[in-house]
Length: 304
Image (cartoon, rainbow, N blue to C red; front, side, top):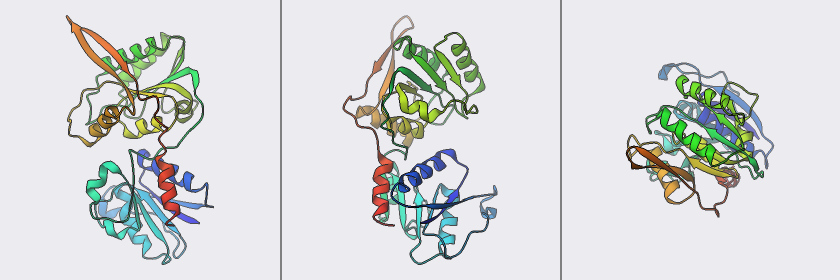
């Protein structure tokens, strides 16, 4: 099966397409061509030439890719399927299949070409965890939550106090402020059990560590990171972060996870005289590992 993957250089988008293609490859022999959208100005964006009458599937995630998927389809075989990952804002009925998160359902009312999933598409891992290993994953400043560095460090220390003598890997991200990185490095230098892993350092695999950590503490600002953790074994906990807007889509997704006990979280409160109290609220112990990508792949296999 010949696939053309149109990419937009957005890591979150490309991760979701990759895990879906990886899942599809378990039941299909895939030959994947990749093209990246180039150019900054919308009407002057382009991709390198592609073959005509060749591809069985055209796939991409993100608004920069959708117009290319529609245009290239005109020069392909009649049976070629164009598949949009996430929710296009235009020509929705022109796509053969749209794979979109449930929280974007309002954008796709009336469409009968939609395969829905919860959260984001993430690699599923049933690997057993290491009881002596924990991890922390830090995002950065965002429009959904207040990123209070002192507050976050305090909660990391609280989390560490609940897991004494465990090996802890702390991962930052592209969005993590340099001042926060300094604080995380200092924390690792003060405790022999902590290893700080900069996102640019490939010597420590974020994905592998996520899959085998028995407890994981994550900031709330990245839905992709949250669902990556929930798609593997181990307990996942959220750092307490004040909401900037409570009607924000991302905030609502996180709040629904908490409400339904699909995820654990740290809760901060004040006792008196400025003394704070932290509580670790656990997720439902009977929760299963999220396997949204497997569900989407199953539905796609019936259509392609």
